[in-house]
Amino acid sequence: MRFSIACAVAFCSCAIAADYAGSQACAACHAEIYRSFMRTPMAQSSGRAGAEEPKERFDSPSFRDARGAFTYTAGQDTNGYYFDFRQPGTKQPVEGRRRIDYFVGSGSAARSYVLNVDGYLYEAPIAFYRKSESWNFAPGMESVPYPFLTRPIRPGCFLCHASRIQHLSGTDNAYASPPFLEGGVACERCHGPGSDHIASGKPMVNPAKLPAAERDSICEQCHLSGEIRVAKPGKDDQPLTAGDRLTNLLTTFVRAGSPSELRVTSHAENLAQSACKRASGEKLWCGTCHDPHTVPAANNKAVYFREKCLSCHETSSCMASRSSRQVNNDNCITCHMPRNPTADVEHVVFTDHSIRRHPTSAPAPSATAELVPYGGGSSTRDLALAYAIIGTREGNATYTERGFRLLQQAAANRTADAQALAYLAQFYRDRKDDAHAVPVYEQAWRMDPTQAPVAAALGAYRMQRGDYEGAIRFWNQALAINPALVLVRANLADALSRTGKPDEARAALRKALEFNPAFQPPKDLVERLRR
Image 1 (cartoon, rainbow, N blue to C red):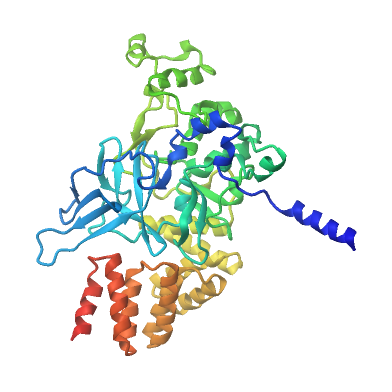
Image 2: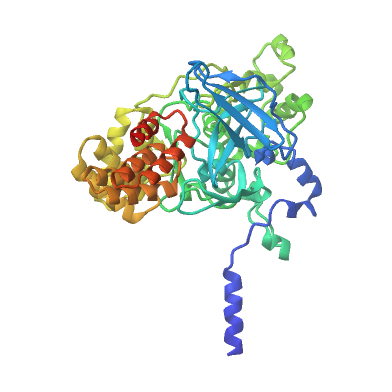
């Protein structure tokens, strides 16, 4: 008996995977590398607001939206950091103050900020831009005509900016406190969990010694955006473990035959388009030119990267005139890798890694080009979601129709998961085909009862049938997943008032207006309940 117990214990200990220890554990033996890395933008890409030396200025002037309807001001007081919004020139101005708890972004180009509402995290509508040393709208919020306080920060948003994320399952955007155990990209993101190394000296992962696909995956987890990244079934928001392949977690799609636009995280696909990469193959990778543990000093940057270029190129191969090269101080990057505006974020510029011989503005990708997987195959389900998501995002009828047909095919082949079924149901609903939409929504909910849009839609169908209690039940479930669904809250209040619960209805409306003070339907319903 004693022998069997010993064997069982030995077997269990062998099956336990290595655990994450945190970057601080690396500092004792790797002090110089640790100190150098902690000064890099990657290591400083998230944290608690005000915990480090601020790179932003909280005394900057206010700015207004494009319509001049709202003004925004960032500030600091004895309780920490905040921003104000105000709608001037109206009889009943919409105004408010929200606290800033965390930042996302190293500050080299910009920083965005995080709002915490009862443990649910949302992106603040303002961001600080380093080049202009000023505040403006956060990416994607420029065209919103009111203070947008309801963009959820899902785990995927944190994966490239923070480490050891503490997301609460069953929700879109709820986290333990703190939401991440380590700000920035930690040592173990690239070298794997460190507990075994600390305990027994077992070697850590060295990315440079991995096979090319596994090596490149470490960088591509954050520097390959494509047109869309579609997680494999059951792999949503899972971080890559160093040594694994990214394609085991997700499929990245690009538009066929089209040059990729310059985006904030498009370095991998831009590099793949370059003549350098096509000629060098697997030999050329991110680590050829970049040391992830350090950033060259500004006064040495041109020389540092020129030496990288000259490891493959003879000086005489540069066809630029001598006078031009002297003007640019023999800076290869100035001519061949210029910093240009990005297509997805205003107010910032990033280095173009397509390494063009004669850099020019790349034509925009075709809106009807076929979507193809980057670096690997894909399933019908993956391709269907790619077309469905991009088509919905862009209002692209060609893509939504392709997505709809592929989703139908995946459903018929029983390869559609809950996410694919949710999009298929939405497409049926958009076509006023409720006879197909409702059972598909119900199937998606049975497969995965953590999809807020599905719960919201099923609640709406219950409301249409006069089943107010059923609608209330589904809408409460949707709000438990993401409390900032203000239209759902307004509809919930309507259902509550119809079932003789006016106090609960008013509470729902007050919460809706906290999330969106400019949202008119809750205001109208509040007036109706007062009568």
